Amino acid sequence: MHDPVPVIDLMLFYVEQGAICTQTYGDINESFYRSITSVYTDAVRLAATIDDPEIYEPFRPRFVAVFQGFANFGWGVYDYMVDVYYNDFPSEI
Image (cartoon, rainbow, N blue to C red):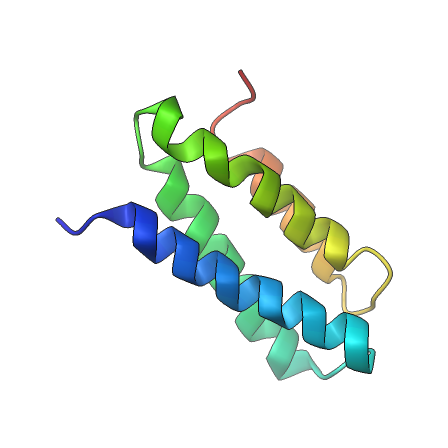
């Protein structure tokens, strides 16, 4: 199996850039947000497969910062990401 750490990092970078675009240009469109939430979900679920907290814990602040970056925008992205994060990510230590 591949090393999930760089994959999660790349996925989070993509979603972080999506948040920056949204903050810079305002609400975009549904297909943009579908792509962003899909990649975010995949990243969270991939991180949840890692058994070692020392590996997945450094990602926690980035996952939270990403959904907070969508807090003031439409399409329900913030609520969706919050649900994914708290339902699928390993519980807080």
